Image (cartoon, rainbow, N blue to C red; front, side):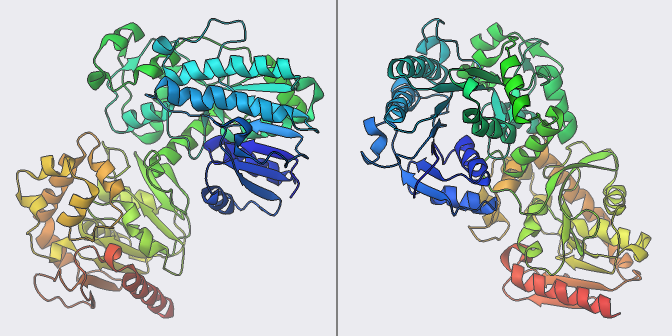
Length: 575
């Protein structure tokens, strides 16, 4: 298939988005990838991009000729090189193979295209112009030094071969899928480990939004005057580092550090103490950049940068949702929201859910995902304040929080709670019977034996805080493949394990009151338990027992739990 454009590095964070943008512009696109391209195709399918005009070609830019046939892709007009090895701690050889040698090979290949209109090369906002000092691999680190050297090689080779070249110098590109660089700082802040800021009040770590960046790239060849141009792409409105961290902290409901440490001091401190990669320290600068030409060109394209503060908050949501690049984001809407006085991690339908799910401990709202995907109506789930991804320092009780969570809800959903959360759910149903159609208590802790090692062992806190996903699954009686990476990450936040153990121990003091209250609820109440996790004594309530299930049937037997919930909702509709 003929192609108007070819994108090298098409399987990467920027490359795949650029491919999607070009396809949306009805271009014939060749996506050059290192491998099969299956991941790219899956990603494009998830983004609902029509791939009828896409050709995936295997390529290796570290080889002269790029591993492509000598004849082919002769219709290509625009060549985009988004390929780069972006990591810290590389050897110079590893970095140069892609960022220097590979970049030069792309220029050579582009020069041989008979219809070439433009080569667009991505460099970086910290890269020097052609007349700058030579890169220093010891001083700068392999990544930045190789990008600096590659920038010079690309410019020189393009001049020599007469290749029309445009250079894009982006700052940190933020958006779904970006989980390195500045993301590391956000991660340390969220985990409660960022005790001080590196540098002073004027440190400037600019960002640019992914969608804006790829739209700019796709438009570059359309302007003849952009040939031989260099464009710094960053949002000048990005807050300086202290204000940037304050923004993230406020959004995620965590404390921002108030102390700072000069960069020179950080460089001399042990890495085990600072948690800072030495290669990232060169980015801590108060330098500003000339973005006028990029802004003028963007204006001519009709492009406008989205509000940077909103973009930063959305990116923080994506980072936390994916556990900083380790898991897939939920299919439903997600993010931090204000619920009453507390920042809360919320997933799903906020106003018209058919089901509201409350998690137990030490799991989080994602423990309900297998069931939420199987029920017959939209669902709402949230991490309790003090637990999971929500604020670690709640200002309200769980009862008040639940009332605030459900305040915007229209209609009468089925309220479903697991284990620890059965208490708040039961008290809500007593206070607001007109707000819910039915109450389903799954493995209600107050009706089961008080025998959990989490409430008895003095070693519970240190053990929890050091658990792997496999060990946590085993301790909870879950299969090895249970998705517990999220709860493990949650438990490693500062003080999280102690909060879990303290809450469970305190909850057992309310067992008698809850056992009495469960029979006074004015709406239908049903129990769901696992056969391997029985009630302490019989109750005069409808009980569904799931064979072979333990304390977490929503994880081990989601089909059975979902079927019961659908039946419960249908029954309330008939009533």
